[in-house]
Length: 413
Image (cartoon, rainbow, N blue to C red; front, side):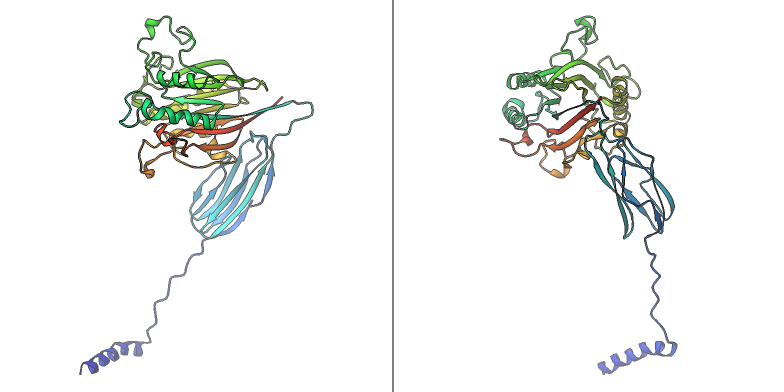
């Protein structure tokens, strides 16, 4: 009986379709994601000093994106379905070698790419070309006072730091948070460098009439945090130097003014004008430490730094800007720097993308990328985050990893 009832139910279920001729519902037609027309997608070679913008015209049926190398600027990054003119501006090639980049437009599965080969500058007849190469390191060494248990300088970090500097052998070192104890350690163990720190050349040159007037300047006093630039003495000569605070009163140790008030603590920048002895080429090195938090203050750090570099340096001068910026590369507060300079980690011929700040945390997912090397009018060959074990390991040198870049500088006159 049960089998009979089941079969009968099945027959009754099928009867309506038998009389009505019902059909399965039709699927909605799919929209093809593609470029229905596109022009300007062609490989090309351009001159070193930049050219008229490359124009790509297209119509897309859906959301689209475009990607370019760091040195090609885009008028648009993406868009919805429609017709567009995208301009691509090629920055001048500051290097001594040709460079090639790929431009890619994507609309769903429709991918259109082309390459841009940009020539290096060729010296004109009668011009003289001079060049030199060097290794530049930035490293927040972490102050040697009030460290967390297990990370004290003398007991745990001094020996690994010594091994790290010996292994990497940089030509120029930019340190942040360097206390007097650590500066003495550097001078005693690495006498091949000349060390420059704020107040090196006396009270008056540091901006004070007498010692009493600098009593409230912690960086001037022995115990204060300081930026230090070390130059390999047999290769480089310091010609001039300067410093400023991120403040409405930049000549005074402060973070005064409405735009800097969320800085939380005074932060200083130190700069050197340097001559490479063999080639005679003159260049600039900036060592800095941005505010660790806040909104307006950190943006002002970038704006103020670019303004200072533009005022101090000619457009053709090689300039190197490094330090602990307490911001990721793509943070909006670093846009003035990105617009004015190139980033070694993004443009070096051999590079890597790794975090630089650990906070001594074991969870790698919490590590961040806040230490940077920017530059102008040079060629970055190698960019490296020093996170490999060296003796006791670079992970215990500091709560930051050292970062270095191998640069080539070429001047034609």
